Length: 55
Image (cartoon, rainbow, N blue to C red; front, side):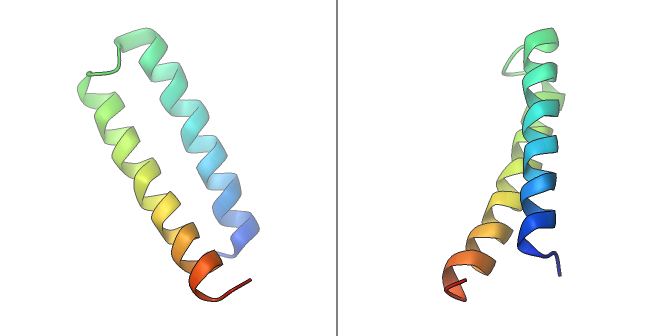
């Protein structure tokens, strides 16, 4: 399981990657959708860890 700070780092990296891909390929490109889904998964992991444990 990821630690909170590791999860935040991965979220920021994925967000940056997504922004770059959207600028190049558009918001509805297959790659942008994939990266967006991956970012959603990371955000869900962080939310579960951070808010359900109260840390």
